[in-house]
Length: 339
Ligand code: NAI
Image (cartoon, rainbow, N blue to C red):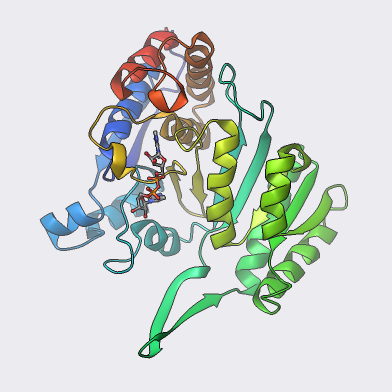
């Protein structure tokens, strides 16, 4: 029985490339089966968009997100060591999606080395090394600029603490390398400390990023909310994904004041693209976050329950989590579990 709101939502959809089109197809099928009324506005981005429109991000995509304020996005390949800039980074900057929110939580029925992880990664999404300002000073010498601002560091710290407070979380750790990057990471830490003072009920800690890797692997349960600059957040997210079963599982949301783009933590996985073996769980969990964001909490809850049921039954899982099911078959199992 569907108890979705009667409202029709128009949402921008970027299938992306690599495994993107396969997993977005499954996820949109599952969302349709929840009964939520969604009209998708689909756009290409990246190399395929360039082939067709001579633009890596077509104007229509910007306009679509401007109009709809919400997007679901598959991964987009970024060329290594040259070529066009990351579509993800450009979109996050353009729409000021300053907070990258990534919950790391075990799914029931999926055994891992760490059975009860429940932590939140909050990654600054607009600056740091990802501003992409690099140049060759002289042949053989390249300069890469990292930008850290008080404004962005305070804004992301506020986001982390207020999220912790609203969701009853107890601790926020700022992760840094201010022993080496004394000015940039030093500024980030000062901003985090200032914000921490406004939240006396939340325990505030600071760890060096290298030590954090060791601490996480030794005992991830010591952390609650991790507050990180852009690059550290990117790297630590993949590390934490391994706690709960891998990159095929972890969702994400890029959040700003005006817009939100929901996407998995993982990339376009070219090694498995087009083989119907990719796990759509991470994108599905991102879509569940999106359903909550647009007020479709009942559909979000039902989809989450269906996902848990399929994992608990362990009959129809993709191969990255020990099963033999294909991407589309896994989607069919979720739809069947929705009832
Ligand atoms: P990746 O996340 O695409 O893949 C890493 C490993 O995890 C691969 O072995 C892959 O097969 C596996 N994997 C990833 N997602 C999976 C899924 N849903 N189901 C099963 N296995 C999965 O990272 P990689 O290979 O470093 O990057 C590939 C491309 O993706 C690069 O061009 C990178 O720039 C881009 N990328 C895009 C992102 C985005 O659009 N948000 C995020 C991260 C990377």
